[in-house]
Amino acid sequence: MLTSDLSSFLCPTRIHLGVGSHTQLANVLKSFQSDRVFITVDRALLASDFYRRIEAILAAQNIQTASFSDIEADPSDTTVERAFATCLQHQATAILAVGGGSTMDVAKAVGILATNGGRIHDYEGIEKFKHRPLPRIAIPTTAGTGSEVSGSCVISDTTRQLKMSIRHASMNPADVAILDPLALTTMPAHVAAHSGMDAFVHAFESYISRQSNLMTDALNLHAMELIAGNIRSFVADRSRLDAGLKMLCGSALAGMAFGQTGLGNVHCMARFVGAFFHLSHGLSNALCLPHVAAFNMNAALEKYGRVARAMEYRVDGLSRLDAARTAVTAISELCADLAIPPRLRDAGVTEDRFEEMAGLCAEANYNRWNPRHTTSADFLELFRKAH
Image (cartoon, rainbow, N blue to C red; front, side):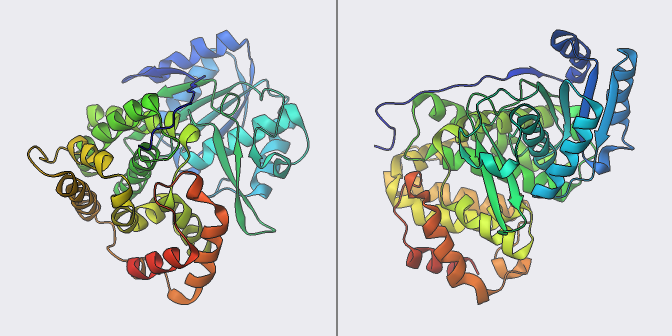
């Protein structure tokens, strides 16, 4: 049985959700009594109708703002430093993030530095900062990372060329998250697919984690139902607001869970695929997912059967093994339907660094969470099978 005997669950974020829920921003800012707001925003959103709506709300409340939009995928420590300098100069009393996971992670990191000082490197690891960050409001514009409610942010260390995870279950989630599908309508189809698969992997790996519990199981099963049941139609047409809202909610549910259960081999491998070959986090996850799902299956047969059912595949009357195999098939078919390249090589990944990557995966010790113990040799074989 994977579910741990002793466990806990926490979600400190207040969530507003629904079509038009971005209008709650005015009331949220009033509750914070903040009239100076620092904004991190995806550059691509600056000319969008949705962001103009946000600006109008801020102007109507006489909020003084300073914005920072020079944010790359997998944001770096130097980006955080520049964003923090802008926030400090503005003397902001609250932070608003409008964007995807990278934008929200920068907002989180700036919030930490504003009240704890130092460099973001000082807080790598678990609960390394002591003072509550500046109040943060997150409006996700992708349905993928769940960063608005998760206890972690990921920042790239440009010196070590590694991703730093800064984790704090109670103080790192945003204080308020606004889940409005109107924020998703201009997202390109491939971004919708890759970020949506990131959310699915969060739910799937959290569900089969060694640290899962009854609370996280419930969240993750429903997250997989929402994502698998809506991602195809959502990627086909982001103006389908009902599908967009369900994707946002599925992403958030998984985000609440994975920060407390840890993740597994998919995320472990994707860390280095993304870092070494400059692929997006969502695509890196999607490329590795079918192969890791097959590898881990024997360690979680019963749970895999429930995954298949959550993905709307028929498993009644099947043996535990056949039901679990159905989940692996369902995952592979989902990736194919979303035009995820079937092999790592199809996304430009080459074999020359596989041995190094396998060693790094083993050192990262995701065996704390992954249901099947995995050695460096196992990781090497997984990379080769995926290639």
